[in-house]
Image (cartoon, rainbow, N blue to C red; front, top):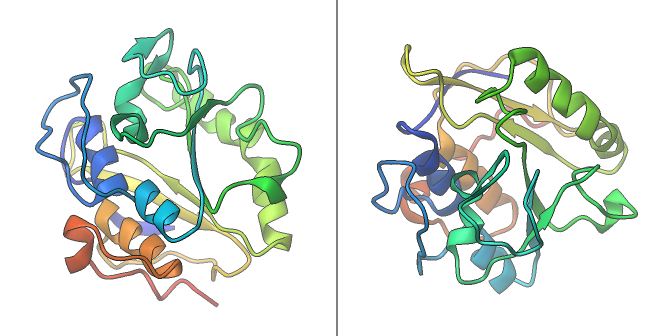
Length: 212
């Protein structure tokens, strides 16, 4: 767990874009729709022969670009702003796959507004990963896979302090005190797969002290 992890800004959407593309793409509000031609984590992975999928709870149909539907909101799914969109609905499990071994190289799993501490309770948001991600976290320990749990922003009353948690067999358990943000997370993922550094991730340090 990182005890000095901070979001880039407020509100939610530019933080997701920063983590996905190394830039807020000039977005300062939770507006919709947008289309960006800039390179992203998704396009870089695909260009390197790897795979990416975004799983959004409540997405009304695979590949939907709707701005909102029930408790689903597009502002939390930055890949939908890319011309190369790949997205699926997560119901009832985040993967909707027969095996975790068939997951893509990188997957983003986004809870609905009721399950991400936005509209629902803290208890609901605490229960959601136990229900939907615990099986994967257990599998990851035996299959050299990494789970990153990342918040987008804080409640708007502090210094935008957020939680960032790494879980996997390669992680040394502990509390880490370096100052990080979404660009450090992106840089770390890019370095894992030998990708170029997008936007502000080029000037961000990769996280290296957590590995065994």
